[in-house]
Each structure stands twice: as structure tokens, then as C-alpha cells.
Amino acid sequence: MMLGMIAATAALGGLLFGYDTGVISGALLFLRVAFHLSALMQGVVTSIALAGATLGASVAGVLADRFGRRPILLVTAAIFVAGALVSAFAVNLPMLLAGRLLVGVGIGGASMLTPLYLAEIAPARQRGALVSFNQLALTLGILVSYLVGYVLAASGAWRWMLGLGAVPGVILGLGMLLLPETPRWLAGHGRTAAAEAALHRLGRGPHEIAPELAALRADLQAEAKARPENKLGHATARLPLIVGVGLAVFQQVTGINTVIYFAPQIFQASGLSSASAAILATAGIGVVNVAMTGVAIWLVDRVGRRVLLLAGLGGMTVSLCVLAGGFALGHGAMLGWVTAAGLAAYVGCFAIGLGPVFWLLISEIFPLAVRGRGMSQATIANWGANLVVALTFLDLVNVLGRSGVFLGYAILSVAALVFAWRLVPETKGRSLEEIERLWG
Ligand code: BGC
Image (cartoon, rainbow, N blue to C red; front, side, top):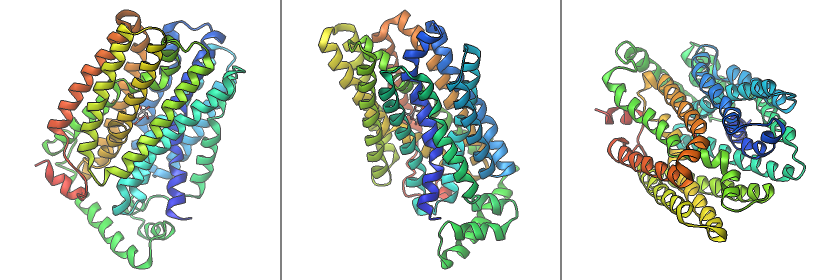
């Protein structure tokens, strides 16, 4: 199999993450009727998957270090498929919640393992693009889930909406049976011959394999040497940890998933009253998300991470203020248009900056010795913050109004901008070793 096909199969992990992130928004319109859900319970149905994801992200890293990336991705896919089927066949609320929890464990694991797998199979010069490929698959998954939601909205077939997620899960699982383990994991476990064979299967030419194996061995030696003093709490790792966890939290508390999860409801509140019109408008948001992620992939190795991050955050702040103003002052058709334009601009600005750049940076900024654990901490923080935002959004809307909530996210975007301006280093074109020295 060629590297491109292997990467595309692995990126199905991102697709699962995205599909499930998005599908709930369309399904919720029907679930709330079918299961008589209060605002709080709608939050719980959405959020229990996030709690599961936090759990999945915290165990996946440790297990993948011990047993290999490939078997744990396989298990993750199986858990996801089981969860999708349990949710789809749910006959009561506890069963629905159990299915959503399983789905969450699956996507939490995949959210961490997919970028890790991609980073470890990529040749150094293609690593940035390949890791961001995960975010592209993620946004595609969100878009597909919206389209599925739209097509099925007329019939209210929420069981199909939730169950169809099993399809990419099955493909990922089958794909993982064929895909190689990462050379880095194999070499790290003393299986040099297998690492060499894996590099071969990843399409490296005969003259590329020996230097890559040597570099891998040198990395691993440095890692072994660094380990005793290079704990996550140690000074050299403290700053990257602050940056990784800080960006993880800011990626969520600036509100992206209130749009991804609740967009149809936001559109309905702005005057698009039919469920299918609201879901179709939401699909437009999904297209913007994919397209701008594509632009980010094209730009990220040219203009660098910082420019995208800062410009994106600036744009998010402005669009959030527009949304807050719209909901405070607008009404009728005007409010509908301002909402649509504001949401599209907001998602576009997220997709060009904080969306992909966060996941890319956490695979780059940690010193080698703590990279896995650092990435895992940042991923846990990301899902935890996601959970808090999803649980509080509908209640905050009741207390502060939509306008107040969007203003709150705007203020947090300014805080994120200052944080990124002061603390995030430019990693474009630098080797991971150079990045490590940057922190000094
Ligand atoms: C975030 C997700 C979000 C998605 C939207 C990702 O980078 O981690 O929480 O749903 O972007 O495209």
C-alpha cells in the first residue's frame, strides 16, 4: 500500500471524530421529541460522548505506548462501531446514553491516536501536511454528518443518522488489519527488523531506509537519556505544557462547538423555522469549515503557524461581536442574514487558525521525551473544556441571552489572542530538535 492510501485510511479516525461531532446537532432535533428531553438532558445526550472522549483520550496514549498504535486504533474503531449501533437501536434513554458514551470513548481515542499515527509514519518533510490531513478528514466528517442529517430530516430517521457512523468505523477497523505498525513504535520496542520492513511498506526507497532508521535510533537514544530529568513537570517541559494545554482550552472555550453542535437551533432562533432549512444552512457552515481547512493546509508551511493563529483569532473575535450585535439588535430577515454571515465568518476563521494549528502544534512543541504524554494531556484538556462548554451553552443562553453568550466567547477570543501572541513560538520549517531548543 502507498503512503497516501495508508494515511487516508488512518485519517478515517478523524472522519469518525468529525462525523460524530456533527451528527448530534441534526439528530437532537428529533431525539428531544422522541425521548422528551429537557434542555439539560439535551446537553447530557450531547455531552456524555465528550465525557467518554476524555476517558478515551486518557487511556489510549498509555495503551498505545504499551501495545502499539495499530492494535489500539483497531480496538478504538471496534468500540466506536459498537457505540454507533447501540445508539441507533436505543429503545430508551439509558440505552441511548450508553451508546453515546461508547461512541465517545472511541472518538476520544481516535482524536489522539490518528495524529500520533500520522506523525509517526510521515517522512519528516511531509509531517505538517499529513498531520493536518487529520483535521481535513475531521471537517469532512462533520460535513457528511450534516448532509446525512439533511437527507434524513424529512423522515426524522435519527436511528440512521446515529447508526451510519458505524460505516467509516468498520472501514477503519478493516484498514487497520492491513496497515503497518509505525516504524517508531517498532524501533522503540527493539524490533529493528520489523521497523525496517514497515518503512519498506510505507514506500520509502532503499536508499531512504538506512538513514531514517539511524535517525530513529538516535532519537530514541536521546529520549532514553533525557527521560530521568525530563518529566512533564520539569522546567524544559513546563512552558510547552502551558502552551499546549492553554491552546487546548482556548480552542474550546471560544465556542466553536456550540456552533457545530447547536447550529440548527441557532438558525431556528434567528428565524429559519423548518428543521430542514436549519440543517441545510448548517451544511453551508460545514462547507466553509472544510474549504478553509484546505486553505490552512496549503498556507501552514508557507506563512507559518503564528500568522494563521493570530489572524484567525482576530477574525473570530470580530465575527463573534457581529453575532452578539445581531442577536441584541436584529430581528426578522435581517437577523437571519446576519446570523448566517456571522456564523460562516466565525467558522472560517476558526478553520484557518485555531482548528488545525492546535492539533499540529501539540504534535510539534513537546520535547521528545515527553511528547506522547504532553499530547495526551493537551487532548484531555481539549475534551474536558469541550464538555464544559457543551454542558453550559443552552443554560447560559437562558440566563445571558444569545447575545451575552457570544459576547462572552468574543472576550475569551481576545484572551486567546493575547496568549498566542505572547507564548506560541513559530515552528514552521524548524526541526523538532530546533523547536526543543527554542524554549530555552
Ligand atoms: C476541534 C473540534 C471541533 C472541530 C471543528 C477541531 O479542531 O478540536 O472540537 O469540533 O475542530 O472543525
